[in-house]
Figure 1 (cartoon, rainbow, N blue to C red):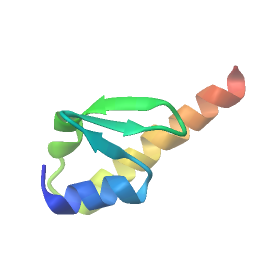
Figure 2 (figure 1 turned 90 degrees about the horizontal axis):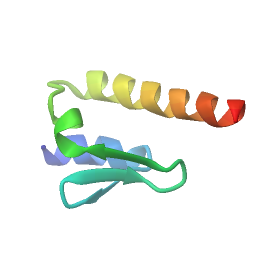
Figure 3 (figure 1 turned 120 degrees about the horizontal axis):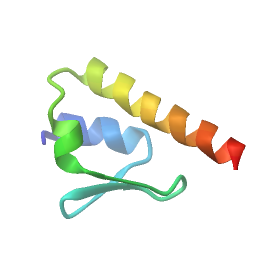
Figure 4 (figure 1 turned 60 degrees about the vertical axis):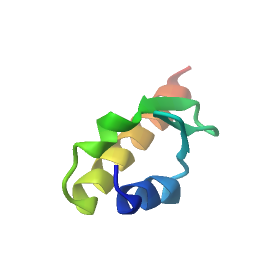
Length: 62
């Protein structure tokens, strides 16, 4: 995972802990390799936005 990818993830509230990335406010835990597969920052941003959107929708339904 590149520094640029980590910067994008941190911008959206994720923090790196070992081989995992955690979003503490929303309770999301994912493996770093899931995000490392994206070659462009635009693709990564779109994927992260999708994850956050889905998590927020899921929490509203509870």
